[in-house]
Image (tube, rainbow over all chains, first blue to last red; front, side, top):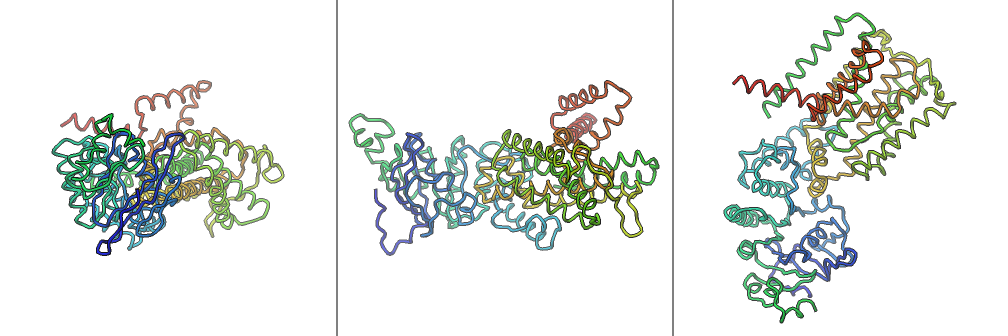
Length: 271
Length: 318
């Protein structure tokens, strides 16, 4: 599927993926996946289990190199870079199975997220240089502000591994935001949350977008995805099955077939 | 934050007077030397704890760096007539470079494999000390290492040496504590919890692990320097595999990821054998038994274990 044409009133895409393919042994996890994300929008990626959503995330964040295809962030090529370099370019992510630093406090977790935004090194830290002390103080205040932004400021000094699961998810988002990303990748942020928590999460994601952060969202909760996403991509067996607004996706017969499994339409899907 | 800060002050409040007073009160050179050894072992343990406890990277070959430190200063002072103070920076540079070259490929390994790799490195260096006899003196070692002196102060006096070593330990403790509470320290701790997440937040984990590996090697080299000029005689036996294991034991017994734990672990494991001489033939049996009991009843090390007991007794009173 080729990328849709841009008209000149639209902003250039923040992220562009150009025929990304990735295979693990005999399993073709991604095949010629192309799409664009415009700045300030929320793109949802849905699809049945094993469709390649997380692989796509891992390719975008350079956890694995793609077998072929190219990735651009703001026209800059980003594939084959080191994972830690991408953060400096403005890409941050959360994990499907929450990966917090469990033995550190919530506040410290967010402060690790500020790693690329601060510069104090071993000797500046040991000598407690005045600028390093000032930087530390400012970082702490900003981290507290982020914790209040996601609504868990009162647990700043709790060991993050001891927080209830829902708050761990929020903490992980706060930690990713601390890197001041332009593109935020959320890998199933609502998994394991109850209905109330999911609604609050949806609200949080909207607020993050209002701050100008572009969001790529992999999510199984259809209700959440359909409410907050501007556009949605449906992946199935590593290929893009459909691409469009939530309304278009909901009425797309191929998508229904992929989710519900109708024998008549399936040749279309597996072609 | 606040209780942590208070606890830390309390530890300094115990540590500083104990060191200052014991230097004054103790007259026996033997006891002063034992205390000096505790200081040297504390240096080793603090350095290894930065790597193992905080960054979560095991090293079973750290005695190699201890030995390289001791041998470098010995060779420079004995063969080349360097003054010990000129030999010190050379010792640190040599050890740092060895750590860099070894760490670069080695730190790609993790977990047990890193343990095996560093174990192999430790053995190679030990064999080098023993067999490269025209440089290292072979298995009989080297004698005639000069004592340290600074102007009119001679450190061949055991009390002066005691103070010198503990001054250095104090500087290292302050250094490590500040480091741990900083941006770099948080990044280090994040590696041991989830290296993937640390990378995804922009931490160059490979680079940071290498830096901390070199730092801990430098601590060991410093300890080796102090050891060589204290005993003025070295042989390969002081830097063999068992010494590496003993360093790891000190970290684990004291409590991982705790600087004061490193001090406690080094103290207990240095003093224990001295106290157990009374058991004569059964010394090692009792020693092993005590280690087993500590690990069974305080699996997270002495510092954490004692804190738990204290907290339990406080909450009972209330």
